Length: 227
Ligand SMILES: Nc1ncnc2c1ncn2[C@@H]1O[C@H](COP(=O)(O)OP(=O)(O)OP(=O)(O)O)[C@@H](O)[C@H]1O
Ligand SMILES: [Mg+2]
Image 1 (tube, rainbow, N blue to C red):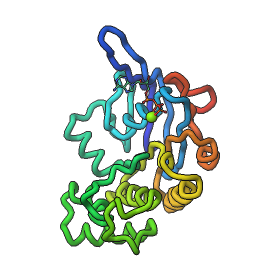
Image 2 (image 1 turned 180 degrees about the horizontal axis):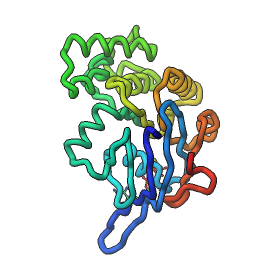
Image 3 (image 1 turned 90 degrees about the vertical axis):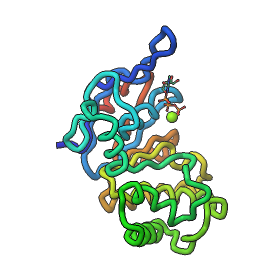
Image 4 (image 1 turned 45 degrees about the vertical axis):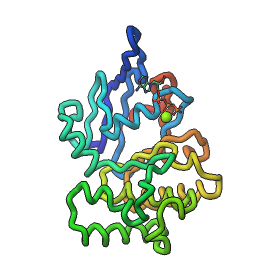
């Protein structure tokens, strides 16, 4: 059974009296342990698709099965539970909390899971080490470089041991060299078994993933769907 499966997914936004079909019948599935990229022009529906995959949003039509559950049938509480335990998000602009240091930022998802302070501290330190930040534990975001900030973002995404990690342009704010270091880190985590979906404008990033989904006007281009 695939880890995640989308069947004929539509996402329609209502704008006054007009309907905007951001996704128009998208079908594909992801196996556990895969690393796939999503490409496509601006406005083609990439972020919309990622939001659905991450249960931040639900489809207008179609079925999304994640870890054996039909997401459309879940209520808001169940969706938020899935988001906090089974999905890790990595953002282009890092989305760190400026008042919190590296360890505290990584601890956020653990706090929401109700993990004890001591356990969550230890886990966060371990994750900070895993992403190469052992010398930066008490730095706040303004005391970090862009690449270091994104390392915090990656560690935070891993904190809850999610089923799947979703990244929307994770290297979009970084120079080529720093971006490559983050990509190397993502590949390394994938080699360790983390399932990952990366939205990117960069063909070089896509070329390094085992599979690329290409969106055009809310539809997958021929030949990129299925498995
Ligand atoms: N909340 C919303 N309400 C109405 N329309 C939306 C909403 N979010 C996205 N759209 C529209 O849906 C389409 C797809 O948007 P989306 O953000 O998924 O594109 P994208 O591929 O991520 O683009 P980019 O590369 O610029 O980030 C666009 O036409 C956009 O204007
Ligand atoms: Mg987008």
